[in-house]
Picture 1 (cartoon, helix red, strand yellow):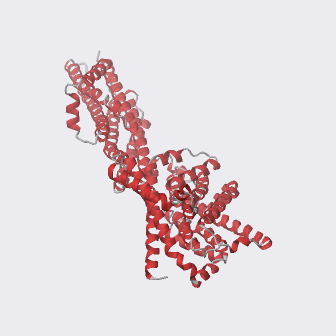
Picture 2 (picture 1 turned 135 degrees about the vertical axis):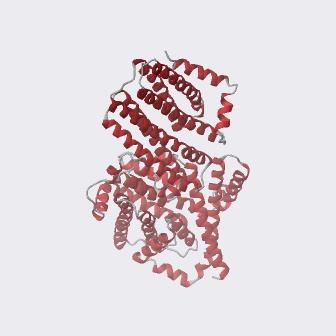
Picture 3 (picture 1 turned 60 degrees about the horizontal axis):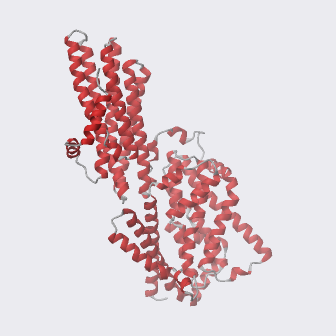
Length: 588
C-alpha cells in the first residue's frame, strides 16, 4: 500500500465522518422542535420508550446524540430514570439504520434498476438536487434538506474512497493476518470499543468496518467481536456527557453502559457456547457490508428483546453503583422548567429552542399568577398571598437570568429561520414578563400600605377599579396567548385594548381628583389609587410590547414606534376594535 493509497484512505475517512456529521445535523435541524414533541409523548410503557428511541435515533442518525439528550432530560428532571431505559435501548436499535444505508454499496447486478440502487449511482443525483436547493431555494426547510442530501452524498463518496483505497490490502499478508488476530473475541471487542470510543460514533465505526470488509479479508469470526466492542465503545459519549450532572443523569449513562456490556456478554456467551458444539462454518467466510448490517441489527434487536423486561433491574444496578440519600433529583427540581436548559441540548439547537420556549411560556404563566395574586390583595389582604407574590417575583427573575444566559449561548449556534425568530421573540419578551412581575410586587406593596393604615376605597372607586382590572386581565390573557402561539392575527387586537387602558387611566385619575377635591377621598387613598392605575398602565404597555414583538419579528422587521404609528393611522380595523373595547370597558 503506497503513500497515495494511505492519503486516499485518510481522505475518504475524513469525508465519511464529515458527511455523517453533516447529514445528522441536517436531519436534527429539520426535525427541530418536533423532537421535543416526540419525546413528550413518553409514557410509563417501556415498549413505547423503545419505539421512540428507535424513531428519534433514526431521524438524527446518532445513538450517542439520543443518549446524551436522555442524560440531559434526566438531569433536568423532565424524564424519570425508569423512562430513560426504553429510550436508550431503542437508540441502539435505531443506530442500525445507518449500517443498512451503507450496505447498499455492496449491491451487485447488471440490471439498470439494481445499479441505480447503488449509492455510487444515485449519490451524484442527490448531491445535484442538494446543491440546487441550497443555491436557488429561499425556503429554509429546502436548504436543510439540501444539506442532508449533500451530507449523504459526501458520506457515500467517502465510503467508496475508503473501500477503493483498502482493496489492495487484500493481497497483503500482514493485513489479512491482522484480522486473524481479531478472531480472538476479547481482542476483537477491545479494538472495536477503542475505535468507537475515539471517534465517538458507533455508526461511523461500523461504516469503517464495512469499508474494510470490501477487501474480502475480514471474516465473520473477526467481525463479530469487533461489532460487539463497537456497541460498548459508543457508551463513552454519554459517560463523558454525564460528568458534572446530577446522580440520576449519571445513572442514565450507566444504564446505557450496563445494557451494552450485559447484552454483549450474553450474546458472546450464547454464541460461542453454541459454536463449541455446532461449529459454525460460516465464521471462516468473508463478511460483506450487508453481513455487518445483519450482525449489528441481530445483536441490538435481540439484546433489547432479552433485556427490556429486566429494565428495572438495570436501573437498580445503576442505583447501587451510584448511591444517594434516597432523594430523587426530579422531586427536588419540581416545576422549574429552566432545569431543561441543559448545555447538552445545545448540540441540537432546534430542540434547545423548544426547551427555551417551554421555559418562557412557564415564565409567562408565573407572571400572570403573580399579577392575579397581587390584585386579589387589594380587596382582601392576606400576608401569605403577599409572600407568594414576592416568591413568584424571585422565581421569575431566576427564569429571566437562566433564559437570557442560555439563549446567548444558543444564538451562537446555526439556527433555522423559524428558530432564529423564536429566539429573538423570547429575548425581547422575557424582560417584559419580568417587568410585569415587578409591577405585581408594587401593587402588593400598595395593598399592604392600605391594609396597615386600615384605609379603603369608596364604592365608586372600587367600581371603577374593577373595570380597569378586567381590562388588565384581558390584555394579559391576550398577549400571553399571542406569545405562546406566536399568533400574529390575535396580536392585532392587543394594541387597541392598550389604547383603551391608557385612556381609562387618564379618566380614572381625573375622577379620583374630583372625589379628593369634594372631600370624598383622602390624600393617602388618592396616592394609592394613582399608583395602582400607573402600574396597570405600565403592565398594559409591556403586554403591547410582547404583541408588537411577535408581529414585527414575524415580518422580519423591528421598529416598535413605526409599527404603532402605522397601525393607528387611518386603520378601520384598529378603530373598530378600539370602539368595541371602549364600549366593553365604559365607565359608569
